[in-house]
Image (tube, rainbow, N blue to C red; front, side, top):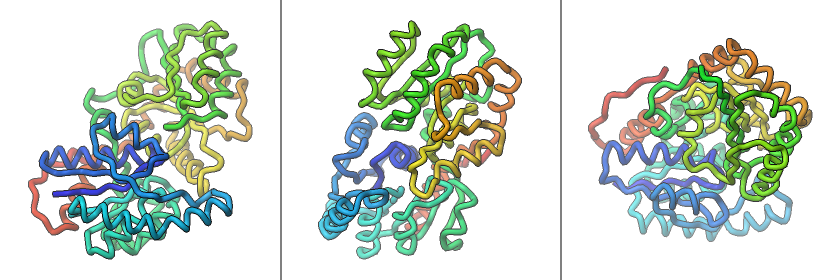
Length: 370
């Protein structure tokens, strides 16, 4: 069987797709999975690291862009559609999966025209424009949040949660705070980093130094790596500062508290590992979907949400120190996060995909949702 996956641009779109791809391969190692992306996204480096093939199309983003960029993006649509037809023919696609973003619409449109079964995954509480546009063309719509069902044809919808890589689960249950004297704080602003979070952390370092046994891992994004590294060095703090974390499962499992954005993928990974968080939603996210994602986790008592508008070093340090200095609160937040997790999303998606294709396949017993 040949599966074509349109996902890329950011880790929030790419990593759920990787989780689904690996589940296809776990069920049937003979399955061929090929990704479709562009040369400008992180998929060029991440997929090489993950061992997947990548085909390119000329799609460009539209939402949140200038008028000139929108016109240029619209101008690429015919070429992107032709390239999509070529990819599907070359790869002899049996199934096409779209995970939102600007690479999905043309691939799913081409699949619809060629009568190749198509499905899509919406990872956020508020759907993106790309998924709204292609929804009538697909046979299944997989959602991470129940509240998103109102935007789509309910006969197609399956609320499955967010697919996460099995590496987050392979080390057993993590949903409890550390009982050692060392506190590990993981800081990351998404796959490309976040300058606003980096700047607030730099301002917070003089305050955070007072926390005994504090250990920090900080993913900065490539553009800000040198600045943040220099700030830790000048503050006299020993921290692991990296542009990008390829082994996020191992680092996240070892964290006691996480400071992060609030993309759908981030929320899923936090909850599957049972990690409490300080969430700083991206204010420019389309439809404010990160704020909606963050509210879900905060309402469950698993996170504290800070607005980027009011973000500064003093406030961030107060929140971090307040949580770490109250072990019972940290444990309660961890337990609440763990209670939100769902670990069978990739399995359910793959099972549904086989159903869409009308194929029989040996389905392993699902581990179920917790």
